Length: 137
Length: 494
Image (cartoon, rainbow over all chains, first blue to last red; front, side, top):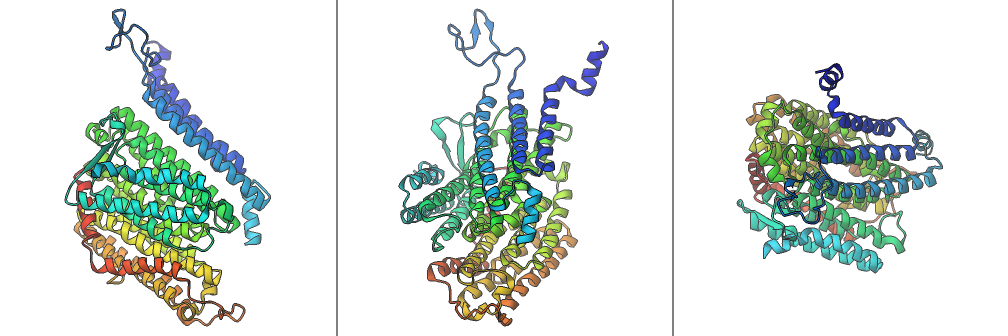
């Protein structure tokens, strides 16, 4: 085992895709918590959701797998010209179609609420809205 | 025959929503949605009667057999939840709020009914489905529609509360989705019973423990378990009163079922409560909720906020029942779902009556209302007594079984704390009753014009107040069913 490989296995970088999406998820969550601007919060929420969607897509990947479309001429067992075809798992992708729809609906609703908040408070900043509430009851 | 109508429970409100959007006639939509909810209630009761005693009804969507296809599966616990949600929806829908929510003009009111129906359909879907990802979808349907419903309250801050609720709810929803993903990774299936059969949870398997953590935290946000409850007081106190009544009576209850199902059916009581010892977290949080939220309720000056904080405390009682992990305590928690729905739903409907006649539910504005609105105030007192847990009301039934369950477990201190926390409830209920009956109205706020609430409002509130007494005396249909459901959960079934 050479050095880079040892490094990879000891830190768990072999799962680099998971590390990346955990980082993405934390970026999203941090924006939601740290930013006062409501639109930025919505975008942070979006990044957070996207990370979860990527998680499903990542786990669907099968090493050496191809798109799960049975090629013409393949028999029912999945064999093609005498050797087995390996497919990626299509189910998580299908689930994520639904999750994306949910995400779009959430974003649309959140933006609509932000518009209403802007109309009522005259600001899209959470801290200014809090001050406004304290002054006006 | 019964498995054919099972699916209508979800499909009826789901299809009725677009019908309301198309017809656009507010009066029609109101009566139509009432009819749909009544039909759902009838189906739920039929299902409950059918499955009582250990029956199971299963329906395969599209004819695809589980575990590949999505299965709707009803046993005692699901039927109990369905009956609870539809009964509360029926009472709330029959409440005549005279003009709908304040922010919705007459020509848009059909959309309000459509969103309400979607919310019901989402909640019923969570309770009925046997597929993990399906639960996520229904969870988001019900959550998205509750954000909309909350934002329709008259006050400017209603929209802000809805936004905050949306942010918290979405984080919870994504956590739940990730948890389901990890379970799928571990078992390769999404059918709940199939997951339960294939999953071999152990502390060494980090993926499974992470799945449990994500699911529990995600659901706890939606359930408003103590430190994650922050969205609830704002959402309930600024939503339109009818919406508060509905959400307080149903939304958190369905989340509680979800939590119980994840802990007992999927991971199993031996792993969660003996190996992982989740009660070491859940029990202190429940007790903190009971004391801190009740304590916060005492200092509220707005009746709706007071009731909302009391809801957080009551959720503490439910999770306390969960953490005992024995049949009596769990049944106590489950029966408290229904009991709390009846009393808190009733109290929020009383709030709606008061808002309509008095125009404010600030405690000071309610001084002397007991003389002007005797029937409304009496319903308020019955609901309040039930919150304290006075014998003869539903609150007593829940606390009796909770304390028995806790004692069975040998947690004497927790039992004492349950009784002590009831004293806090006595303080905040007593504060309201004192103002309503014994304090003279302020001269700046004359109440001579205030009359008794109209019958269309009073009757639903009184139905729930009467139920709070009736089910406090007869417990066969509440505790009987809850006990059966608890034993089913402890045996790892749904």
